[in-house]
Length: 241
Image (cartoon, rainbow, N blue to C red; front, side):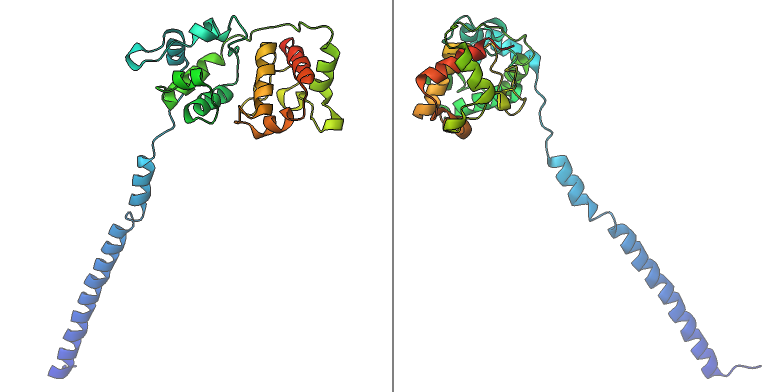
C-alpha cells in the first residue's frame, strides 16, 4: 500500500520521539548509577576521620615508671612507690597488681584536681593520658605485694566489718565490692589485699573528713565508721591475699 505524505511524516515523528526517549532514559540511568556512591562518601570520610583508641604500652609504662622523663620533668614513680610498685613504707601505697582502670582513674583525678594531693598533683602535671594508661598497664602486670594483719586484738572486728559490714550503721560488707580475697573487681573496685594498713586507714579518714572526694560511695561509708573500726578493717585487709 502506498503511504501518503502525512502518514510518512507522522511515522518519522514517532521514530524520532522513540530515539529521544531512549537517549533520555539512558541519561537518567547513567545519572542514577553515578549518584549511587554519593550517599556513602560522607560516611566513609567520617569513619576515616575517627581516630582509633591508642593501646596501652606496658613497656613504655615501665620505662616511665622506673626512669621518669627528664625532658618533661617527670620523676620516676619508683622513687616513692618502689620497684615494680612495691613500696617500702606506708607513706606511699603499694601499686603492684592494682587494676589498670583504677590506677588510670586516680592519676587522672590527681591531674584534674578531683583528688587533691599536693605531691601527686605535681607528679602527674606533665603526664599525658597515654602516659597514664601506659603506667597503669605496667603496674597491673606486677606481682601482688603480700602483707599481714598486725593487731591481733582487732582482727575479729576487722574481719566482721570486711565480711559482714555493720548492719546497725548501714555499713555494707567490704567484701561485696573488694571481693572476699581483697582482689577487688577489675574496672570497678580496687585491690585492697596486702595494702599498707596505715595507708588504707588514712584514706578512710580522708573520705570521712571530706579531704578526699573522688568516690561518693566511699565517702558515704566512711562517715559511718569510727576511728577504731577504720583501723581494724584496714589492718585486716592488709593480710588478705
